[in-house]
Image (cartoon, rainbow, N blue to C red; front, side, top):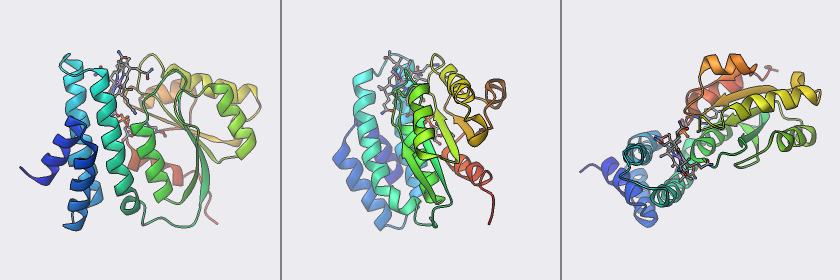
Length: 212
Ligand code: B1M
């Protein structure tokens, strides 16, 4: 088995310590952080997702695996973000109300940090009013929203509306993403940009910051 398969398997098994050890080994062997993330950590979660869909894997296993995956990304963080430059702008990021999924949001956060953004992370299950409050308090350039459930993606639209009502819509760019979200949905709710993954989200975010 390759080390990527071993890492994938350790995530699948939710074995945090083995994940940490293997990720460190991979980096020591000169493997790229991006490959370790994509071919190891995320592959394990992808397989679990399939198992969950087929009723072979259940919520507790997903939770344990998510913790193991997060341990791995913490170690990769330094490598994935080492190209980072001085703060180019500020982003308020959140998983929307009713939604507890944070792995994708955390990856987007990580890539944005790597691109030089200062991040205000509001966490998961964040209400539109809490996001409005954070925009008032932190004056970010961008609000980035993540949703993983078809039942919560409409909360992204609720955030757009809440920012409009608060008179703040024109002061921030709104970026959206997450598995059920599409470009068409982004347009429909009046957000400014959809990104399918964390890397493209960071690239897209830079386009909202005027060059000096
Ligand atoms: Co949940 N879950 N889950 N889950 N879970 C999904 C999403 C699901 C697709 C599984 C399935 O049925 N196949 C399904 C949703 C179905 C649907 O709505 N269509 C589902 C369900 C049903 C549920 C529960 C309802 C299950 C239950 O309780 N019966 C429940 C809901 C809880 C809640 O939120 N209220 C639930 C709970 C959980 C756990 C808590 C156990 C756990 C999350 C742990 C955690 O996040 N800390 C969990 C997990 C792990 C998953 C799967 C297996 C993996 C999600 C993940 O982290 N993927 C998932 C199945 C799957 O996706 N295959 C599933 C890896 C991550 C890197 O990808 O988040 O898509 P993703 O992020 C990507 C892009 O989408 C993008 O960039 C990221 C990486 O490049 N992106 C953005 C994400 N956010 C962005 C924001 C941006 C830009 C890009 O802003 C600018």
